[in-house]
Length: 144
Image (cartoon, rainbow, N blue to C red; front, side, top):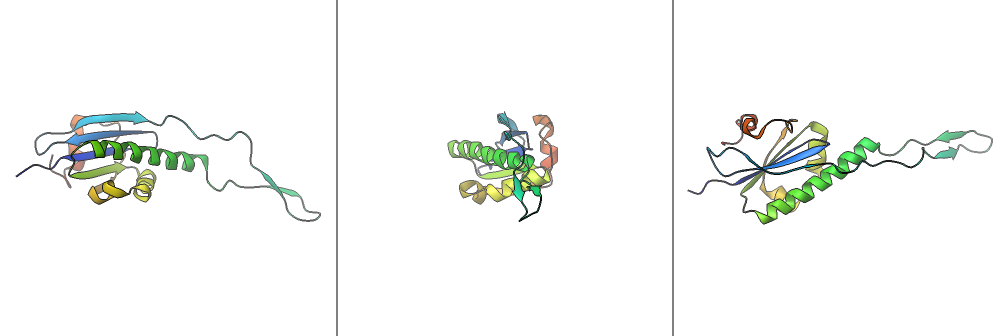
């Protein structure tokens, strides 16, 4: 019986790591490690609106905070890189883990072969954990 080849994404809002597991007893080997390259910034302050005749001017609230926009942008970038790695490898399943808000962004944006191969997603921020120690964080869901 052929062992499952698993691609593992470990991400947070600032960095992401892609690791591969080639079957039971093989552990995890890092394939790629990347960080957010740019932050979304605004050139000026919020806009203002005239409330009506003889009314004062009011500042407008931004529709989305810069942090949310940065998270959304990075989630798109992470899934793009992950999809490229997935397409080059002969993987059987996909696993991802991220903190709650980033995991939500990844879930909202995942599609195609990655979505179909997603075996499990975990709500954990373990980007800083050494590759040798990562399997214990997945022991309830995957045999490494």
